[in-house]
Image (cartoon, rainbow, N blue to C red; front, side, top):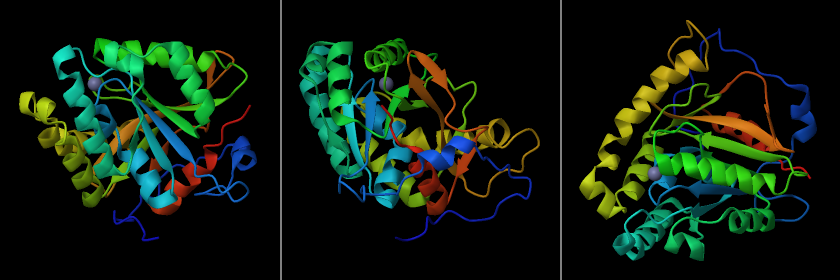
Length: 276
Ligand SMILES: [Zn+2]
């Protein structure tokens, strides 16, 4: 496994994050050594194309830690005449990223139902589920947050690792900044460009690097802490990792994490162990 090509310089002020439960949850990285099953991430994408925009963490976990990544689109967009094309675009984008598209029948008719999503998640038992955050600045993203949480709450005895994503409105309290190499960014842009109808209307692929540069600026202060020196890497995506169980949110670790190297990513992967 090659090391992540992002630079390794770190500030001496970098916070240490140790939480007693971490060691209890830790498991091996990559395929499960007992069952041989690959670890799985599920992205609940409000629209086809969101899997690329927020896809850095899943991409790196797939490439560097051997995870499988499944994309469940909650909708195929608001325009019925575009839904067949958007499904094809999603499959093309997923094949660039090495993700698998899992399009539920109800998404082709509007929005996936909570029961259907709950059954899919229950069967998949993913290590983590990526969903938009509750205050993202797009009505469909907010609706998908609610729907996904409702789906998780149908299995309240489980502790679900949830990674909340941002795009249309920033997360107020992100706790995870994941660095992107130029290769990661290039692949995400290439995949995003597969959503031809969307980028023709608004070229999200062209603006992705600028967004990821700005994420480093925000992440340095919000996750590194006030006065934290800017990281050496230029591109990143911000997330909020939480645990959902019995209808309540808890923190999977104290403070925040800045994930740059493959070793740091592997430590995070070791925490993603669903219970229940
Ligand atoms: Zn979207």
